[in-house]
Each structure stands twice: as structure tokens, then as C-alpha cells.
Image (cartoon, rainbow, N blue to C red; front, side, top):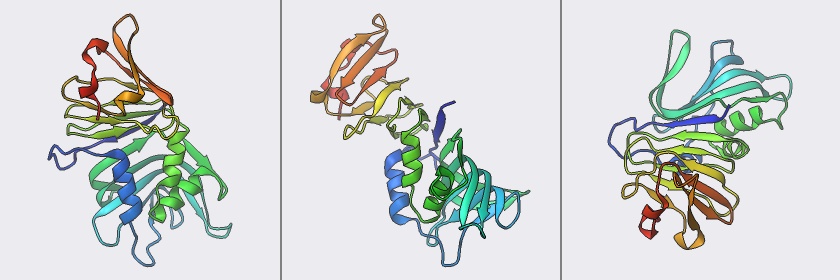
Length: 240
């Protein structure tokens, strides 16, 4: 099952979410309060089905869902499984679970497991504890990811695997990191004249695919399939 990432225009201002810029901003700005080591929910002091932490200077917060345990006497390792990560604002607890007042990014079906300090569970959760999403992004690079945009104007970029990108309304920009292999990606709802592709037009070829039903864009480091798009409609004005 592919990892799923849902973007939400939580304040309904139409701006949408820039996925990779959001994570970069988290890495730059998120910092917990002194002596705030995060909170487990749905278990004990050192284990639970959720783990959350808030930023010291804003309402920004995240919630990790799964089956987590902090091994205090075994090398301070975070063990168990991570199923989901939510980023947003204003975390609170009610009825034995934590939730965000506004969820910007909801990542599910992660399927992360681990029992040592070199496994993905520890690397991802400990990274987030320290305001660093690098391990999470590295894990996503190894997966096939389905990204669903909000109703706003999102900037949607996949990872290194074969990803499926859906804008879901708004004037969306689909971006592709050509500094390395970005996989064989699919954009399910590209709208000519509204949406844009963030990749150098001069570095790609554009051709018909699947009997003319789709458009195939080929780059040295990956491909992009625009489903339901006539390749004759795609030109330099669709690229940025």
C-alpha cells in the first residue's frame, strides 16, 4: 500500500500548501520548549498510540500515530511502529487521544517499524523531536507516495519513487526535483491553462502515450504521465 499524503487548506484562504517548502520551514523554525520532551497518549509515560510535540513560540505542532515506546533504560531508543504523521496547529487532548485544531499535512500508511537507534522509527521520531524532518523525507524517498492536494493552489512535489500526484482543485504547481532521480510519476488531474509543471521545458520531451489518452513527459531523471491530457495541448506555457 502506498504512503498517502493529504494536503489541507485549513484556513480556506485558497493559498494551499507548498509541501516541500512547508517541511523545510519546519526544519528551520520548529523548536520545542526547554524540558519539553513530547507527550505520549493512549499508553503510559513512555509509550502510547500517539506522540505529539508543540513549538515553543507558535501554535505549530505535530502528532505521530502508531505503536510507540521510549526505552529509557535501553539506550533511549524510540521503538515500535509509525503509521502516520500530522503537521498543523494547536494540539490538544480529549477522550484519550490527541488532535490538531488545524491539520496542514496528513501522512498515513507509513508502515515504519524499528527497535534500534539506527532504525527508521527512532530516526524519524527523534528527528521530529529535534525539529528535523530529514529522516522522514529520506524514508518517503524509498516509497511510492500518493499526494492529494487541497482545494487551494498547492505546490505538490513527489519524492524519489514512483509517485501519484493529484491537485484536487485550485491552480496547482507540480514540481519535480531533477537534481536526482525523481521516479516515474503520474499527475492525475492536470488542467491545461490552469496548472503548471515546475521542470525545465527545454530538458524534456513531450509525447503521446496510451493510444493518445495521456501525455508522457520524459526527462533524463524520470518521467511524468499526465492522465487524460492530449499531448498537443502541452507547450512551454505549461512549464515554469
